[in-house]
Image (cartoon, rainbow, N blue to C red):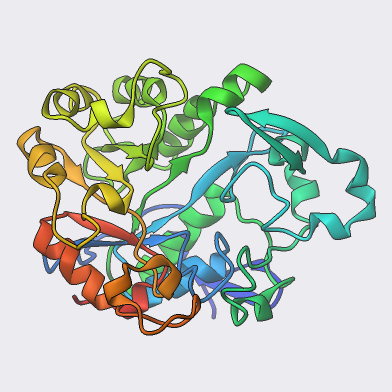
Length: 355
């Protein structure tokens, strides 16, 4: 491997970078993202249906299965490093509870109105987080994933960018990034940490802040998106929960924001929406008006989340009465295609790619 660099981020895993990729520079002459022009396949926390979520192994698996974008949820450490975890509470996705040296870090925090008792990323330095190992968040539903518990570290956003570039050099195709900032308003209010600024600085440093950088940034809050719209040219996505409204705008409701006038307002600071699947498809599988109305406002639509297990699928697409049985995931993708969505989040890119 003369002339190459090997980065060993994880136990038992080495990623080889070409000299150009190792220097952090993008590789040129790559096949564009979504070259076939079909719906975008966005790997939700990587291939999280096959590996513990938000690990480099999960992201690499998703890339190898043909995902157009990989999606890291970003939280922040005490020393201001963006890392990938589903929530700032790391209790369910790491082995922190097995580390007696961190027993006194357990806290109860009110996170956006929810009282949560656990260990929180913002109370740990990166060096401390590096001593932990990831574990499967839903072991009862995905016992096969639990085989990988204890193998993988918590990756930084920088690690994920480096993986993207290494895999681009290996595969000859562009790989998109789709980061989500978790609780940016709450973190700024409660800790003074500005993850919007941290993300912008990192995207600019990496040359990933342009409109053509194959990056989407997504947030459930309105104000951070409005700030981002003034700071970077990267396309922005407003995430939409099943009910309620954005944490930072208590007078707003998701329902009002999904009306034609509400979507027109969203379009003043965002380029698309990431709605809960139930906002796009009715219970009987027929499309709602949301995609049509969003497109009329000039917004892309990327709903979440396509998963293979029966418990996550509409009754008509389930294989049997079990929760963990594999249902007709491709049938759900077909319904989304018929609804006209521009892309979708999935835990199982290997089962849906090409539909």
